[in-house]
Image (cartoon, rainbow, N blue to C red):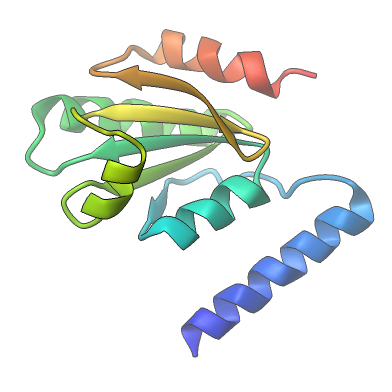
Length: 133
């Protein structure tokens, strides 16, 4: 039943977007993605989404986690995390060969890819290219 509730919530958000002509406000916390449909719903619901493909055993992934948490809290972009061990098929579909891999989606399309440890400034600059009107 929780899947139906989630689908209904997404439908309500989409209806509101259509009526107001705006995408939903972005959450200020990380979203954890579990599967292709979850990722698809997220990138379709929000204008700009930064997706962090990570693994718990990855040192650089652990180092970048506080940075992506800050970005989620400070920007209009949605920041989502995908555990590649739990979502191997999804990681494969997006060509993730090393972690961390960060994909930036704008208006539902994958527009940027960065691999490896990144500093906060470079990620903010990347996001700003797609969030500024």
